[in-house]
Image 1 (cartoon, rainbow over the protein chains, first blue to last red):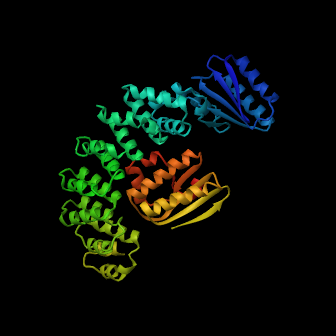
Image 2 (cartoon, rainbow over the protein chains, first blue to last red):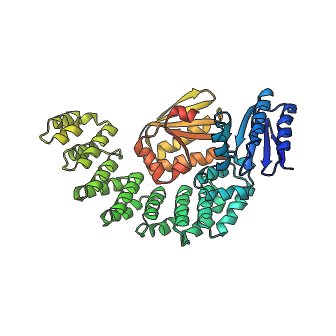
Length: 341
Length: 106
């Protein structure tokens, strides 16, 4: 059969093969009129890679007949070539076009991990509809060395909270492929796998910015009372991006030690971009003294820092500092006045 | 620390103040109870000024429990700082996050 009909509740799915003859399409469109109890007809073109112009008339007939039985008509999984034909014929406004991954076999679906536009959506779809078949398929990919497939397989298992795959994902921390390590660190952070924390620490000062950032984020998610101190040592790193991710991680940890470390660093920091990040980070702590630090930063010689301080004061609604802020409005430095306003 | 409003067949929960281990755990417990009377809960973060990793862990745990009982949890109206925490940890890939309440309610 080059046209397959399948009913799921009140949804009729019609899956068309590339080789479906025009006559068969016409007959399929007519057969809709015999359907009862159908609320939606979905014409699935996942197997079609081009369309002849004469077949467009059949598509219109599908819609007309669907409307006659009082159902909604949707064309699903339209490839770029067919989309172009529909656009050229001004039919994209006539049809509702969507993506329906439920008709794909698991092995077909994971192939979409290679398509940049679809990979995340497919990963979300699999995670939301996780079953044994999808799981087995993803586990198979985990045994492979294909970086893109493995990256999305790990993320998908993470999104689906598939704790059974935890050991496999831990193994990926030893991979030579940065993309795979990155996904593994992220997911182990989501899983709360504190056993992996020490291994993740080793990526904190690696050469790759992407990995450093994910390592810092996952350590923050897995943190206990000892981690602020350990991470704090990275605040003196020569690399500005290492400092920035450390600040983000300490902000997320948000305990007393993290607060103290950020305040200490602000007093010593000479890079104005980092100072501004520190001020923004400090404004995210619900601690006594934050508004004083922000008011002081409002008088900084750096515009970036003053802007961060003004944003922080607005964020924490520092009503107790209104008179001090007002006194800055007439500051001899017009920028200080500007940010005070 | 939060208010609940009915919006059709969904419930919207306005979280306020700080989300930490204690408030996050309380929030989780209450939201899971709400799922006895609805299939979808939207958490509005409009009133959240502070959140830490312990609070975030509770929100992750809430999502895990929500998925287990096949219900829907959506998040919306986050400040730039709170949204940054989700992006930083990659959790923006895990949660359904919307800019506005209207978008979350569909």
